[in-house]
Image (cartoon, rainbow, N blue to C red):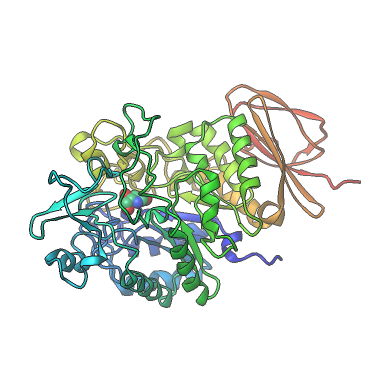
Length: 529
Ligand code: NOJ
C-alpha cells in the first residue's frame, strides 16, 4: 500500500456524546454508551471517531465551556471509562480524536476564578482584561458570536473581559506564555493517554489584535444574520500570529508519532489553506466546510472542488465535511434523496471525509418545542434560526419511543421519521445505512478512491462528473444533483455502485447513459487497451 498516514486513509465519524448512547439512563449520552457502540462504527467502515467535548463543564455551551481540561465530566463517566473507550477502540482498529477547546474556558474554570479575583493575581493576564472606554462602556466595538457585545463588565476589579462566545466562555490570552505552556500540558495529558489527535475548536480565533482596534462595519450585512456579521472580523480572527501557535501544537503532536491535528476554521479557501503552514508544519487538516455552505447544484460543486484542489499547497492533504453539530443536517438541507448523492460525493472526493453521526441513517433535523430549547445560540438570539438543537437530537438506534438511545427522558426530543433507525435499516438492502456501508467498503478497498488523483471535474446541466485515478485504476463518478433524469457521457466499464442500488455489477458500454433524477453512480472504467 501507500505511504499515506492513517488519517489520510481514514473516514472520520463525529460523535456528539450527549446524543449518541446513554448507558446510565439519565437521558444524556455517555462514554460507556460510545464504547458499547464502537462495533457499530467499525461495521459501518469508519476508521476514527472524533468525540465532541466530554470535559467537566457547566454545560452552558454543552461542553464547549470547559471547567477542567484534564478530566471527564461525571455525566459522561470517568477517566477509567475514557481509558476503556480508547483501549477498546484501538483493539477494533479505530482511532480516537478529542475535541480540544483552547480559545476559551468556562468562567467556572479555576484559572478564570483566579484571574478575576484581583488585578494583580498571577493569572490576571491569562484572560483578556481591559479598562472601560472613556464613557465607561466596553473598551471597543467587538461583538460576541452569540449576540451582543463581546465584553463583560466585572464589578469586582472594574474591568471588562472579552468573550468571543458566551459571557460564560471568557477567551484565554494566547499571547501569554504561561497559557501556551498550560495548554501544551493539556495536549500531552491526553496524548499520553493514547488519543490519536485533536479537532481544535475555533482555531482561527485564538489570537486577537494586540491593539484591540475596532472592527470595521460589514457593508454586506443583511437583516436576520447573526449579530456579529454586522462587522468584518478584521481584528478578532485570522491574525498572523495564530500560525505560530498552530505550528507549536503540531510540533507537540509530532513528538508522539503519527497523530492528527484538525482545525475548525471557517474562512474562505485562500486563507483556510494557509493553516497547513508554509512548510506543511501547521494543521494536518484545516476542516473544509464548503459542502455545508455551498448552493447544492452541479455548477457550484464543480467549481468548489476544482478551486479547492488547485488552492491546496503541494504538501497539503484535502478533507471534506458534510455535517456537524453546528449546522442543519444534510438530509434537511438538501433532502433525503440528495443526501445519498452527497454521501457518494463526500466518499469519492479526494481527501479525508468526516461524517456526522446519524447522517448515515438519513436523520433529519428534529423539531424542538419552545419549552425544550437547549442551545444558548437559540436562547440568546431567538427567532433568527441559529438554534443548533435540531441537528443534535439523539441517535436513532431503533424504532422505540426513545429510539434505543436512553431508558430515561432524552435531553432533546427524538427526531424520528419512518424507518430512520439502525435496526430497521440494518438488513434492508435499499436502506441508507446499507448504502453507506457499501460506499465505505468500496472506498476502503480501492486505493484509487483514497489516494488517486481527481481529474476532469465537470458539470453539465444538473450532473457533476469526475474521475479518480491511480495507475491503471480509474473510477468515473456521475452525480445527478436534481430530480429530473439526465443523459450523461460515460466511459466503458462496470457500474459498481448506485445510490438507487439499480444495475450494480452491470457492464456499461457507453458512450452515454440515462442517469435517473437524484441518482449517483460509480463506474469502474475498463483499463485502457
Ligand atoms: C465551535 C463549536 O463547534 C460550537 O459548538 C461552539 O459553540 C463554539 N465553537 C464555541 O466553543
